[in-house]
Image (cartoon, rainbow, N blue to C red; front, side, top):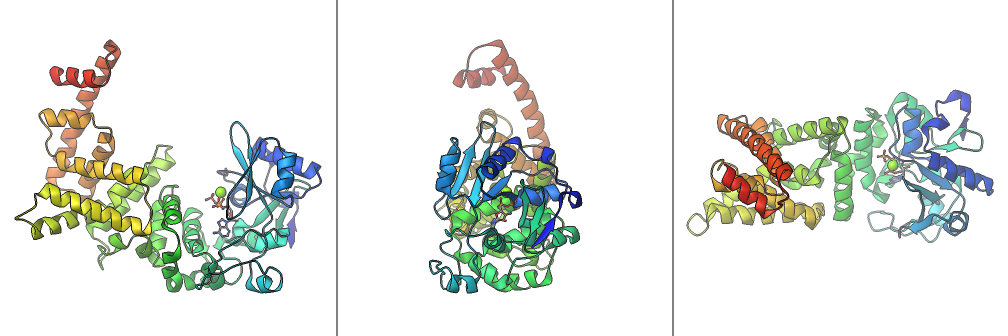
Length: 432
Ligand code: ATP
Ligand code: MG
């Protein structure tokens, strides 16, 4: 273990949340070891403001319940304590047992692995060293001690952080087999922190990428949001393609990719992810409905056209489009469990694209009041940017003018009268 004393690192208590400090002090005072760990320490050492602060301790969940009045135990796979404050929740985990194979067989008979080597149960407490080795990458395994303000490094994370290297802890292949999501995390952190991936950490990824098929689709959905909606989506996408991971998460999209990497699906992805990154940097909201609606738009369109052509005598284009929507989303959900509340809105946004060309008349007015109009409008703009055809550019310009003029009227009506809902619609229809 390397101990980096206070004078050799730049973590200052004033950058740590007051509540995290309270939890650390209280644990120390009660005689337990307690450390800040994970992304929080990594980001503080990089001079960035952490998203959240995780604490780890040798106190068991039962001991924490006794120590903190505002404590709830959560989690099934691994029990965690949530210390609840009015403004934030501090997550406290008891040191977890080491999960190297040697350790399992000699010490922990309770661990279970699947056929591919995946770790199935992970609920064993251990010492801080064990906890350090079971984390994913070295820079995520640094411990900041409140007792002496030092940083403790069991796996070489401090040097890797200085040198900008993403390195898996332990034997990479074994660690990927235990939890294939680590492959996605490696790609994500390399993109987010602009770091290089150590060769031995990178080498097994394309070979083992298929193991992602063993991950529950609900977990992959959560991971996908972290990959694309946390500010470094475009670079993460490039890394995922480079390491053959993207095609496992999005087989439908990858089937539409071309050798010259210039298919409409790829151009849409690049534009979409660059826009999303820009929005996050500027503290604007991002929306998973828009993300997935835009990602799958061209495959959806292609599928609708194929179905419409095949059934030109017995199906309207609208029906073919609906069948394609159903198929496209079902196929996507086999890998990523996009929740129903999101897929049903994606369906709305896609359907609205069919109505967008009708810019005048009653239908256009109704469209503007649709709850998903804004998202549909944004998709139209993105399509116009990607396709760059005069028709789409003209259409998006017209909608933007129409939208502004109608919005002004909506504002006027809602400030001038108390009428709501349908009454507003009636008034708009009468006004224009
Ligand atoms: P972020 O800034 O994205 O939140 P993070 O490092 O805090 O980054 P989390 O997903 O919040 O990432 O996880 C917290 C910590 O838990 C990590 O820093 C790492 O030490 C550990 N960890 C998370 N996922 C895994 C995993 N799949 N395998 C091993 N350790 C993990
Ligand atoms: Mg975190």
